[in-house]
Image 1 (cartoon, rainbow, N blue to C red):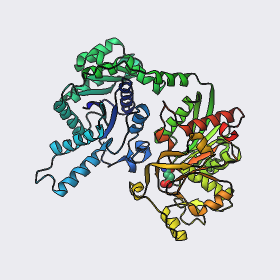
Image 2 (image 1 turned 45 degrees about the vertical axis):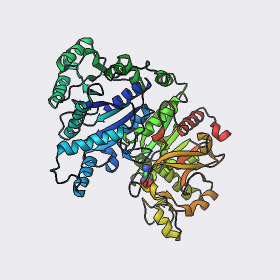
Image 3 (image 1 turned 135 degrees about the vertical axis):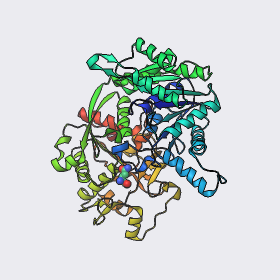
Image 4 (image 1 turned 90 degrees about the vertical axis):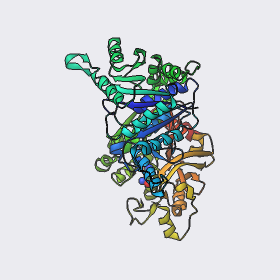
Amino acid sequence: MTSYVFITGGVVSSLGKGITSACLGAILEARGLTISMIKLDPYINVDPGTMSPFQHGEVFVTHDGTETDLDLGHYERFVHTAKGGRHSNYTTGRIYESVIAKERRGDYLGATVQVIPHITDEIKQGVKKGAGDADICLVEIGGTVGDIESLPFLEAIRQMGIELGHDRVVYVHLTLVPYIPTSSEIKTKPTQHSVKELRSIGIQPDILVCRSEKPLPSEERRKIALFTNVQEKAVISAWDADDLYKIPAMMHDQGLDGIVTRQLGLDLPKADLHEWDAIVDAKQNPTAEVNVAMVGKYMDLKDSYISLVEALQHGGIHTRTRVKIHYIESKDVEEKGVDCLQGMDGIVVPGGFGDRGIEGKIDTVRYARENGIPYLGICLGMQVAVIEAARNLAGLEGAMSTEFNKETPHPVVALITEWQDQTGDTVERDEESDMGGTMRLGAQAVSLQEGSLAAKSYGSMEIEERHRHRYEVNNNYRERLSNAGLRFSGLSVDDLVEMVELPEHPFFLASQFHPEFTSNPRDGHPLFKSFISAARKYNAGELPEAAEA
Ligand code: GLN
């Protein structure tokens, strides 16, 4: 029987509710429990797939190809048993879409369809589906208590507390306890008000997690407990950590997992946090440092590449390397040249959509290729690598992706239907893999070529990685490109290009899929480990192992 922990937020947004939820999941998992995790998002978009990264950060893709909120990425990185999917992220739009569809079908048998009970029932059913058969399901409610939009979600979780009982439901509320420098005072009032707001809709929190700059003094803790009707030991202080991976231990040391498991009546072994300790140790005691340039769009908005940034850091953890990421706008490379890439030990071109700065990305690939700098291309980063090779190795002048130039004389990257048009060939496509309309989404199998850098990095010939893209390398150009020196080292079951590399280069590897979505700090990820190792060797003036072998 699954128990539930509901996590709400108060005072302001951006307090790190996703990370807090993920860390709570991690310390509960460390007690031997299986965990599922759900995010409820109050906005009306049906999913975040259509939202600008400017507004909402990265779109995280789950194994089953669902485009979800970036918090799902935190969950998967922190909790091994939490496998996100279709039922792990619900928005207001999705809930209403489904209720309206039922109403149109006549499922409500003439009833007047209302927020309570129809919308709240739909939310509760969704939560139960997402919970699966895990021991504990953690449900994070997006937004801030007091927002109009989040009310139906809060009402649904209130009802679940009554229906399931106090020994199967725990309410955690995350708040801000600000420090006012002019009066040197810590202020508990916003927390008091936020809890008051929550209680006014019928939810009494069992645990408060208080975000603050410094650890909360015991006097303030006592005061908060008194004014909010929460036990003093259940007022947890979450101060600004210099490292994300210190947070599980920070929470465990204050007994957070114990408070939850006691309320749920679970008698469990102590938390085993040795893997988290090892991560912190590796981060604090690196044996080398590398400078990695990430050349893309939206570089002032780091949340749009959060999984990739994390995956690079995981590569650092598993090679004891401090990874310094330099965020470079590809438009700047286009306009001011490649000088800003000097001194880099590795270059990454991440995934992306839209043509802004595309020539800058192609110039970046050329610079990495000609100077033997380790290169890792992800999705669009692979497509620009193919375009660069087409133009400068295969002599296909004006080669481009049809995403950016429909009239290109050499559409080396194009929609599958476009290269079918070009030759009259038909390409067998698995309909199932076309979830989400025209995008290729979710995990698919990839076969790697024996002896390739890709196969050596993975230590395997068959892998599975997640996708999120529309355009594909045009198979009609494969022969010309491989004659020019580009190796197609990974192919999908339906013969689409998944990985390319340059055997003559110390480390030049790019993938059509997004390896960052499956990287986590405890295991690391083969591609990022080998990329960071290559950057380390480049930095030391040596060749990376994979190329030497
Ligand atoms: N825009 C490219 C495509 O749709 C790449 C997408 C990506 O990098 N995620 O194929």
